[in-house]
Amino acid sequence: MQRPLGAQISHMLKDRGVDVIFGIPGVHNQEMYRGIEEAGITHVLARHEQGAGFMADGYARATGKPGVAYVITGPGLCNAMTPMGQAYSDSVAMLVLSSCLDEVAAKKGQLHQMKDQRAAAETVCDWSVQAQTAQAAYHLIDRAFTEFQTRRARPKHIQVPIAELEALAPVAPPRVDGATICADGFSASAAAKVVSALKSAKRPMMIFGGGAASAASPCFKLASRAGAAAFCTYAGRGIIPSDYALYFGSTLARPDSARVLAQADLLVVIGSELAEVDIWRNELGHDCPTIRVDIDPSHMTGARRVGDIQIVARAAAFAQTLCDALEGHIPQTEWRAQDIAATRSQWRAEIAAERPGIVPVCDALQAALPEGTMIYSDMTQFAYVAKEVWDMDRADHWHHPYGFGTLGYATPAAIGGAIGRAGKPTLAIIGDYGFHYTMQELGVAVELGLSLPILLWDNGKLKEIEDSMVRAQIAPNAVIARNPDFCKLAEAFGARSAAPQSLDALQAAVRDAFEADGPTLIYVTPDVGQ
Image 1 (cartoon, one colour):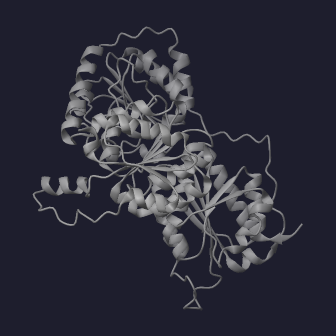
Image 2 (image 1 turned 60 degrees about the vertical axis):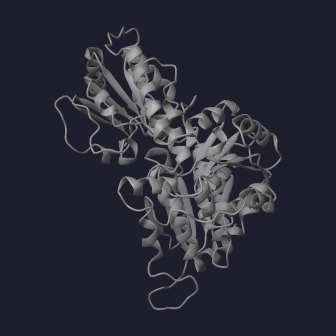
């Protein structure tokens, strides 16, 4: 049965498991909306394409399914490029579908015209391509979904000319059930080398990144059976339980962690780039053989030492294989639990001194959250402290704009996460300045009746930037902006609000917010912990 291509694409997405699309319709992409309801897909209307992209990101992180966004030509796609860049940096499966003008070389002055829309999008995603025909669009969509399953998850962009979206097209090919896609695998000889190295190590150290979050159980078993001390990156928190005696926490960015890593005689890194935003220094600090496990071979670069082993594989396959091989092994580790506990205590005191007053608020908030709460945070000092002192009880439940570092992420991403995890607790943490970027998406949470607490940390300025300027001996400039009455603003959207003046009141406000029939903005200042 022939329909306009826009409608056929929606039906195809439904067939591939897409239940929710985030976006904003416009005259240039309205044909993409023709088939959404008929296909049985829920569309979430964002207030800005940046919000739509962040919602798709949050939905993908919460569900493990690709987040899908529909945007228009030109400014619509440009507005979505910030969340696309964030998704690229943080390895998030996002598919952005946009319209594009039919002719841009010979015809100028058109609505939403860009010099090269496709090329602009390609700067912030895995690939950006134009589908000239219906069959090309179908092929590219299936290519995206296959790569989401088999490669490092990163955003893709497909644009379709307006005339092609309007034209009649045949039905997309159906999904083939029962097909097997093999994405893992490393040689038995490589596994044997790793097992031998782990059995002979006296001070093995393991670092787990966000790429290992879906393999938390076998990764923890592997660390235990090897007698390894462990760090998690910020994105890897929850892989190692907080009560594991040899766990150093998510404190790789502590300068003193280089001293600890220098004591290791074998380092195993699973699912982490060890990027600047993971360690905040040029060198990790170790001087021992390294075993690197990652799905992305581009990380297997740089200087190598004698005994280094580099394996391209998914964390789950690697960790389970090694766990099985080490079953019954009695580790002879020289790491001492009391030394690690003392180091963690010292680092916690340093963190509390660096950004005073935040650690007690983190502790109070953590104690008030329901089990299994998923958290979305923004670029704010509260989150910077929490990422180091807040041990998660499960992996993949704290999401942050780690690499790209965009402001305004938390509110719309938490909305996407709450939609993807209907009935399960979700929390947003955002700073006063970041809230300005995407505050309009609060209206979406109100419309959908989401029981979403949004903790707004207001220190009255760009405090992190002010502190950085002072350290650089620059007179602080342009770090203070006039804020509105955030509680009244939230109420104007139809949301609830609270402004607790004590830690007990903060906990009560958070608990009430999870029971509310809509979002609650919880306004918190540094005075709350005084």
